[in-house]
Structure formats: C-alpha cells, structure tokens
Image (cartoon, rainbow over all chains, first blue to last red; front, side, top):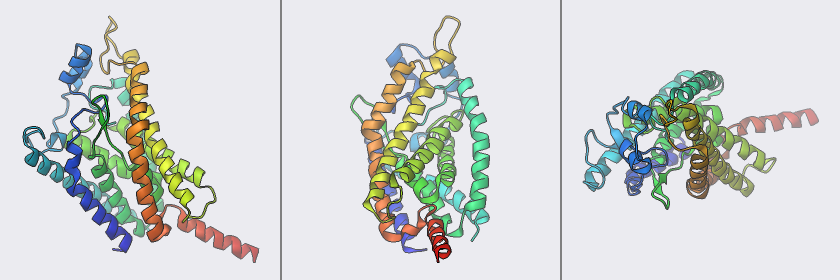
Length: 107
Length: 239
C-alpha cells in the first residue's frame, strides 16, 4: 500500500471512531420524517405514504444495533451501534468494490 | 437527501429505476474498460468514505439536519463513472441494512447523489481549473466550488422530485398520496439548507482532501496521467 492510500485509510478509521458526533444533531432531515412526525406537520398521514413506508424492515435501522436504544435513551450503546454501523458499511461497501475492482482492473 | 419509502409515488420511483438501470450498466462497462489496478484501493476507499461521511449529521436552524456526500472529491479522484458506482453501492447498503433511504427510492437517491453529485462536481472542477497547473491553488478553489455546486444541484433535484408528488399522485378529492408539500415549499427548503449549510461542508471536505492529495501524489487524480502522456506526445510531434 502506498503512502497516500495508507494515510487516507487512517483518516477513514479516525472518522469512524468519531462518527457518533453525527448522532448529536437530533432533528430529522427534510422530507425524511417518520409518519407520526409528518402527521404533526400536516395533520394527517398521506394514505400512499402510510402504505409504502413500512415496505422494508432493515436489520440495523437508523445505524443502530438491532432493537438498540436511541441516542437519547443510551448515549454509549447508541454510539457503539453507530460505530459498528460505520465499520460494517465501510467493510462491506469497500470490500465489495475492492473485490469487483480487482476482477475488472487492467494495468 | 435519502428519500424514504412512501415519499415518492410509483410514477416517480419507477421512472428513476428505468433511468438508472442503463446508467448503471454503462457505468459498469466504463469501469471495466478504464479501471487500473492502482485505482482499486481508492475505489474501495471511496465507497467506505462516502458511507461514513454521510453519517456526520449537521443540524441547521429550524430543526432539520443534513450531511455532506463526498461525491465531488470522489469524482475528481477516481472519475465520475467510478464515483457513480461507489456511491450507488453505498446507497444500496444504507437502504437495505440501515433503512436510510427507501428501497423503492434507491434508484432516485442514486440519481441524485450518485449521478448529479459526481458529474456536476467533475465537470465544474474541470471547467474552473482550465489549464491551471495541477499543483496550483486555483484547483483547490475549483474543487471547493465543485463540491458546493454538486450537492446544491442534487438538493434541487431532490426538492423537485418531492415537490411534484402532490401534482402526480392524489386521491379523487385531491388529497396527496405521498409527499404532501408542493414545489413552492420543497425546492426552497432543500436548496436553501444545502446552499447555506451542507454544501459548504461539502466544499470544505472536498478542498481539504483535494489539497492533501495534490501535495502527496497529484498523479492519482482522474485523467492526469493521460494528460501528461498527451503532453509528451505533443512534444514528440513538435520535435
């Protein structure tokens, strides 16, 4: 591994360690509200949205361990879940592309 | 910017699947034709970096949050087509495992963050850089502007996609079936919070990483080697 790649990888590991900083912002991104949040805003849940919003049940919802506590309920556990999610995302995503890249790359 | 399931009706999300499938296919062909062994670790790092960077939520006044994408610097380093693939892989994982972005909306989110961001950034960077030296500070500024513009443009697209829902999808009585807010609300909301906050973060991240790579090994930037080779060829012709 050359110096550049190694240093960028070190930078990435540092980002993963401090990732729980991203949990401090408690609001919801625009247009990503849960059904009850939207109901508070407009007074109803649009019928199509209600039907479609539960189409998929992700195993690590909101970058947390399965059924883990929210950041408000347990900052340490939610932070560990968040770091674990970052590790899984980085390894699976990076690993997949490394594997595909090695197969298709030319010199 | 990760549109969840339920915010887009089938007209929109199916249209984006139809748009994205040939784009992914072409990007795969481009990657297979162009990717060099030297770039593979950077391709892998790009996907991992984008995934982690998107976890850094930043609050803005009014209770909303957002994040940078990193797609601009990725496009400048590994090229827009490879960036498209790296970011798409990231977005698919985010949707499937972590519920960030809907599964019906995967193609739409890949269009906004995987196509708009890298392509706007790459061509803005190229245009502003012009013939400036690869080590020049002009290029750092070009990268920063490219980062800002790319995320702001993606926000414009996302705002538009959300805002057309009440027009496209409603009951016979006119009640919206999906995103209830109209274009006059969604576009300013998305564009302003990005232009004034998240895109500035994107610009800073883009500039810092760009400047670091520029000082360490500028030959890794997408297309740079071939330009050097082209200059050599031109010189050869001149001699």
